[in-house]
Amino acid sequence: MNVPNRMGRGPFTVNQVEPGDRYELSEGHAIYCAPAGGDHAKASSIGALVIDSDPAVESTGIDAGYAFATDTMRAPDISVGVPDKPGWVEGVPPLAIEYAAKGQDDDQLKAKIREFLAAGTKWIWIVRLTVPRHVEVHEKGRRMKRKHPGDYLEAPGVLKNSVPVEALFDRRVAQEVTLDNLLERKGYSSLEEVISKAKEAGQLEGKLEGKLEGALDGLRTAIIAVLESRGVAVSAKLRTRVLTEASSEQLEAWVRRAALVDRAEASRPVTALGALSHRT
Image (cartoon, rainbow, N blue to C red; front, side):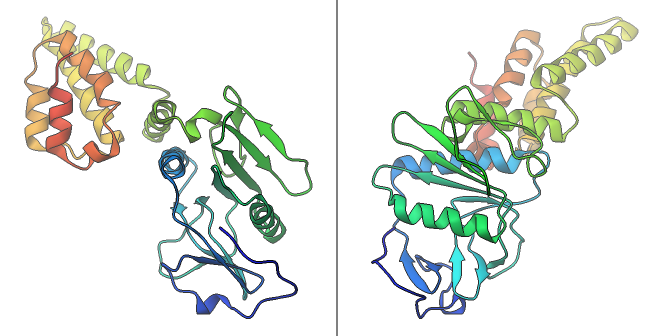
């Protein structure tokens, strides 16, 4: 983004900017926001998935515009606390995340950070995508802290779980964190607990019935539970495929494979079936 040097307040107000316009406002001055590059776009979509899945989060937004003055409207890459209604969001988010790639205008970024913190935002995380990648943590009245891969980010009262730094730009780590969050929303502490409980339930049923089928049923139930926790629409065809599988080894492999079905596959049951049915 870029804006010429300015003095005093500019002439523009929030009601002159429409959703979809590529401008933010800072004290009445229009700031053009260029489209994101590939690294920025990919990383921010990964980070949004992680933040949105946290058990304490009810809503998140990408590029949501927050109007916290008549002449100031800012849009962080990711934010927590976005009502499902038209127009700009009034106030500021408790947590805002910005991605800074090569060519970032740091003067404008610093101004954006100051404005959000002054208006009441608790935390601003700046994800630096230049090597070495790291995250800057900004809080009002405190010195900025740098967090590196291997460190964790926390936002008490906003996020329930800590976030590994890598989860904001590494797809594999983000998927693992997201899965743990989704399972926690369903009452499980981890994927291993899902598998363990399913096996225990199945083995008990198997003992009572005197056959292996009880254990297999437990694994089948685990597969469906993991898929549904990830938002996969479990079609009749997919359910039948799982419920008719007789190999315990294959079922155990499917439980783990179900955890890796991505968002695109999750929205298409047939694709999800193909991914699940591909044998290792």
